[in-house]
Length: 249
Image (cartoon, rainbow, N blue to C red; front, side):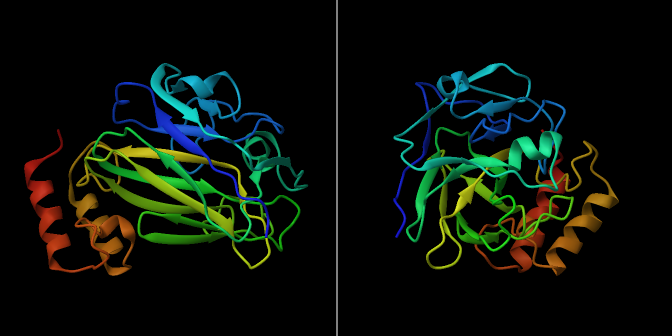
């Protein structure tokens, strides 16, 4: 069994506003530029091991009051994948490893209530045999394989949709995806969803939002589970219609 470490992302006194965050867990291969969106949104990427740790910056580069803490006893790594370059290499060619066969836990605390898309990256560059298991909310996702030139869910990253309640916490578990493997964690993105009815996030409520919601509902996409009970049924449709009728804030 590999050594177990703990990451905790916490907040200083006072909660950070509902917002999106980009976090790179190690700087060995560099930090992605602010123009790089990954699977989330473009904006400033925080260096989890540097000065940003004391005051995480939002996408606009301004301090949020969020901070990183913990023992960081797992091992940083750099694995140069021959298929990556630029911002992709800065994100995927380094990170932290060593979770092994026991879940390493990371928590994001002090978030405002609401819905967040959570993207967690777990690729061991040049080692396609390695797999990483992520647990977020009530869901699980497996990453790893041979990088093919683009970000692909289930290979480079896992995606979760999480409803944050009064606790203000998003909890993330990381472990080796296959017995005896280490588990690799490159970084994460949080994307706050200010309006659940605006399915395509273009700032306009129209037929295309309804169409996209129904498509997700039919595919049992987590973004269509608007009651967050793990079941896709009429209450989800009912809530979407209610939110759509009410309009966005």
